[in-house]
Image (tube, rainbow, N blue to C red):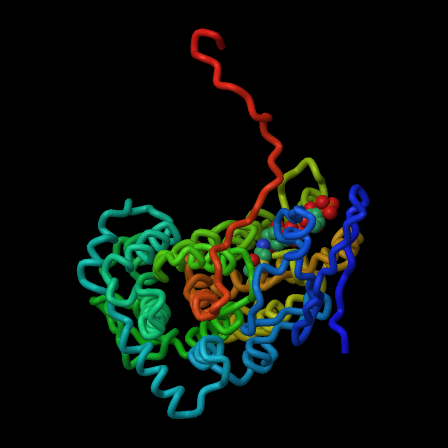
Length: 431
Ligand code: ACO
């Protein structure tokens, strides 16, 4: 059977090229524009990558119209119900679900890399006491390359594996230390007898003065949130990690660049912004005013936690979290939390509004994650940090996939130059 192609004709020269059409397992086919560049000399213009596939990948699939999310083929709803974050991490990195021996061994490896070098701890003291924990994360994760340079040869697959394990294992420790620094409390060492999320809670909330028991409801809720946040194909932060990694930069530097991209309110920073927005709205009686503001093109305000570049239907992660919100709030005696009531009402009103219907704007994962984090006692400036811990697994999986691909080349977009035409230098006295 002949391969499908698209024929492109340049009307100014009558030249034609055949562009190969490539099919994936699921989803839209893509057009390989290589022959267009080579034979016609044109580039494409696609700001924001709204129609451009930047790579091929076998990790995660999203169908934005149907509201489907698959990790290595498994629907997120099934993983949320039946799996654990550590198992999902193995799945994303390896491609297959682990058997019992593989899972135990992976868990042991991750839990035995949780400590950070003692000298690295001193870095935290250099940050101002009121530094945002995300700003500390960007610096400290990047600085890991100065401490663990025995695993930074990106061409060595064993080095890549060790770096991946170190990053996943040390993120909760660095995150908790960032938090402890911001509240002026002593750093708490990891306890490797605890689970991944139990350990994070212990390092964040225990102090040397009092006995601390991990709350199993909070531990389970965090684990679920981390499963939902673990990967989301070629989003802004993952694409940033890939772009940084394509130059051969070390994995710690690449993940630090991912944290930077995640921080913005249009991406992972939306969970903190969504909670701030609910606090600002304050009462159900103000919802109409804020919905009107979000529709006003002269007003920069947007309904935070609404809309998504890919989902033009319900975000499947938001659906899972909506149910979980009820459970968490009920279990800690806050089932009548006014903020949650307000969020539900806002969601109801927005989903019936013509503007939101027409533009297919649905609540995304960050609309609910902030409310759950708040109910778990996580301070709002740590919400995006939580997201970064979970997403490290996805970033590392994509980085590994890219580096192992023999066809990898440095990412280097082109541009449409609209600056001054070539001209001659004019001496200072003649200007
Ligand atoms: N409130 C009001 N209007 C919105 C919103 C919103 N939250 N989101 C999009 N729109 C409008 C835009 O103004 C635009 O209107 P127009 O066509 O009249 O110009 C239209 O919907 C399309 O929006 P774009 O910004 O072009 O869509 P894009 O795909 O570029 O942006 C984004 C997606 C950034 C997520 C956007 O919806 C947004 O800013 N949402 C709020 C922030 C947020 O919740 N981010 C988290 C995303 S999920 C994640 O990263 C984990």
